[in-house]
Image 1 (cartoon, rainbow, N blue to C red):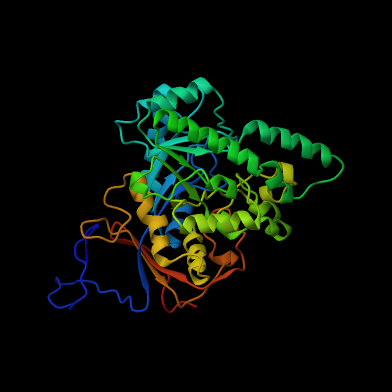
Image 2: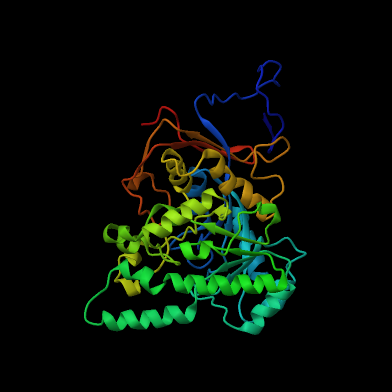
Amino acid sequence: MVEGNKITRIENHSLDNLPFDTEIIDCENLLLLPGVIDSHVHFRQPGLEYKADMKSESTAAVAGGVTTIFDMPNTNPPTISLHALRDKIKMAEASMLCNYKFFFGITNDNVDEALRLADTNLACGLKLFLGSSTGNMLVDNNNSLEHLFANTQMVIVAHCEDEQRIRENTLLYRERFKDKEPTAAIHPLIRDTEACYKSSSFAIDLAKKYNTRLHIAHLTTEKEISLFSSDNIKRKKITCEVSPSHLWFCDEDYVEKGNLIKCNPAIKTVNDRSALRKALYDNRIDLIATDHAPHLLEEKLKPYFNAPSGIPSIQHSLLMMLELVKENVLTYEQIVEKMSHNPAILFSLNGRGFIREGYFADIVLVNPSRKMLITKDNILYKCKWSPLLHTTFSNSIERTFVNGEQVFSNLMDKN
């Protein structure tokens, strides 16, 4: 029973004695899940609205069963000041179809301002780029890093790739391919396992030194998994996430997909993908988050070295993970835990992430018997493309509710 924006009753018995004018939704043969909390997205607003914006990407999000998003700071201007953060919140109030929070971006020079955020509840966490990516917000000043880790009480979410190794590998492959254009197959060779492991190890050592709350974003390698424990998330100080793209694709897919699956950190080997799936199953990996990062198709189709990194994925992330249930890689319960429960616990989202009385009515209905073919017509990203084009999923998202309000409906009689 949903009244207003909250779940007020959870019952299995008679529908008698309901309040007058209660709308009854028949969910027979459907899955009722808590809405997905995607704690890692790039909605590109402000400044990059030609790629995406809050309205377009939140529309795609709710169509995929995502009811809460956490947006990253590498926009234009970047969200690296309290003024920029407040401006972004105002934009979202007028645009978002889902719940939202924003990360505050760390630079070499703004740690003191970031430390003032702890008592404001304005940001969901601090984003730290230890390797350069879209927006080039690299933090490479050790004094700034020590100051941050020693003093913050907030969750630090770190993009971990060793910048020096990436630069050396880039020079090596630019020289190797100076007479011809390389394909995206070299991406995991430039942004390789050692670059990821070296940076993740550095961040974890720093967090252990200061007992800092650290979350490693988008894990991609088998080697890094050894850095994490399978303890309950409520007892962990160091956690990590994996993206659906890294659980779905592997380096063999570069032949067909090319730059369409170029992302940072890179999609790596079949063995890495298998290890990530296993680590998700045994709780070494705590969250599934998309790193939804749209670019225009014409940008992605440029030569490898000129093509930006990033994959749009938020509309299809739950469908991808439900497909892994069908393949016996994960269970329904694990998907709910990694995509709803754990993000709510990690980022202290009180009243969200669970189907419980008194919690906000963020709900998604899934039809496990109705297939979904991805076509150009039903891709809702502003960039209008997906590496999953022409993929047929075994499930479909039927309805999504945010705070008790229906924000998406895929009508049952629709072809």
